[in-house]
Amino acid sequence: MTQAQGKPPLFDLCGGHPALDFVNSLDERFTEDGPVERLADYGDLLRFAQQSRLLDVREARRLAGSVPRQAAARALRSARQLREALASVLYSAVDGRPPADGD
Picture (cartoon, helix red, strand yellow):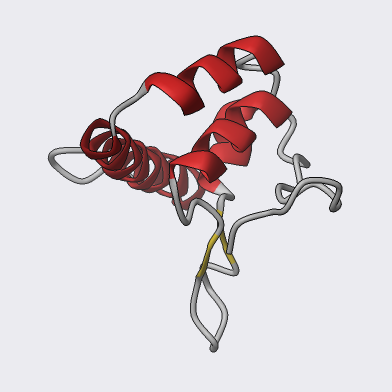
């Protein structure tokens, strides 16, 4: 699910805020076919951060070239966990209920 260079952007940044766009990186969350993971690897996480203007090109390249493989996998796992905690809090607010314990 990664994006090759020269192709259109992988992320549809339509949420109006990077946090909302980050939640939307698990696309089609509520469809019958199930969700589509847009953060398939560490490179996707860096592309999201760069496209969202959270990292500039130089920072993204530095991280892509300097982070060991295991650390990149941990960062991706942590980012996905953060995304799901944020999604839970946001969906709770939309539903008018308090977030679940641990969110």
